[in-house]
Amino acid sequence: MRRIFWLFALGATSGVTFVPPPPPKENHRSVLILGGGVAGIIAARTLHEQGIDDFMIVEARDELGGRLRSKQLGADNRRVTVELGANWIQGTQEENGPANPILTLARRHGLKAAESDFYDSMTTYDETGQVDYLNVFNKAVADYTILTIAGGERVQRKQVDSTCRTGYSIIGAKPRTPHEMVSEYYMVRELYLRFDHKLISITDWEYAQTPEKTSWIASSWASASICPCANNFTYDVDQGGFSDGNLFSIDQRGFKHFIQAEAATFLTPEQTLLNATVRNIAHSADGVVVTLTDRTNITADYAITTFSIGVLQNDDVLFEPPLPTWKQEAIQSMTMGTYTKIFLQFADKFWFDTQFALYADRERGRYPVWQGLDLENFMPGSGIVFATVTGDYSQRIERMSDAEVQAEVLEVLRTMFPNTTIPTPTAFFFPRWFSDPLYRGSFSNWPSGFVSPHHTNIRANIGQRLWFAGEGTSQKYFGFLHGAYFEGLDIGKRVANCLNTGNCASLPFTEEVLSATPYVA
Image (cartoon, rainbow, N blue to C red):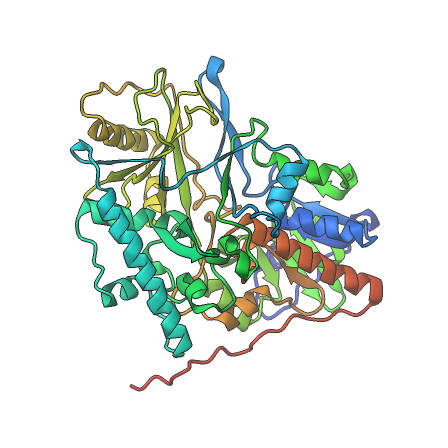
């Protein structure tokens, strides 16, 4: 009998509704916020500002911050803080235009950051060593501009979506050489905003997935002048964005400092439960019961879940009753990109003096983007350089041992610097975002065939008690910290309104997402 009870308590379903034992009275809150990242903290702040303090943030890790994760790296006498996850404030502020709210918080709490130059501070390499192929890179920029214009035209003509790879093929851009492949991988998009020339990163390095897995239309929304919007609008003031600026956090308190410091302005210890992993969420018209992995039950009138799309896709958190089919279809239809930084520290610097370097390998996506931190205005004297891999390649290296990955990375460095003896690094580390059950990837991406009603369904609440927020629920800024901010703000206001007025207005959803054109067998 005990075994059957715990199957229900852990979310297994067999047509029987899970009715957990009543928790102690002190384990009840008006609102439970599940996840202590940007969306969760801003939702909590919003409740507080609306006069609601009977809430609790439930966070699996030992600190707040979500995917803002930093690490002390290096030899004992040269330890520095590096960012494993989010690192940039992307889209800052143009003149008196709107400021990215992440920038506003960073300024408020004195976060130290440096300007990133994605284009002009670049050195290029291939399997022969340093070689200049910026002409190839510039052609790739032009090809992407043509791609997005063509994608915008598809929207205007109401044509079906396809992948970016399909779009590239149609316009005749088919990279075959290592130089062409890495240029496409890193791609910056050429935009003309307010008649100024802007260059914005847009493909694998930004979306953390290949053109085969990215929507052609979603990557072209700026050209189509429609919303919901991809990352292009982050940088487009005319579309509600901020600017083309990018600030790279070098704060030794960690990038997480800005959101932890903000949380400290209103949170009390009783409003935060750390080291608490959610396993099951039972929801009904009367409220929610959250079961932790240690079998503790906490009840609430409302719950705001801020789990990543990847966590929801992998059933790392179970729902009782299960989420409706329209919700599950939407969650499973979006994708989760993985963006992996591989850090190395050396006793002496031997690499490029630019901020970035591209390495063109015969295998697309093999350790292509490099960044040096041992630079003036960044982390001088740190001896740290790091490579970035994304998507399937991130998943590949997560299946390997640290020693195997280090050996591959050192092999690439020896290729890039053939006349240099590459020593053993004094420190080496990379995170495993994809296999971590708290994340299952780095951030969401819009794939081909994923349409606006799908995203509306991702965002929609279930009943009046269960709500969803996070970067993945943002139709305008999915994949970005400010997307998480705006979603936490909006859902926090909606739940506050439920509590303060009793008027709980549900978000729209589409029960069946239909094809524009029927399939004919």
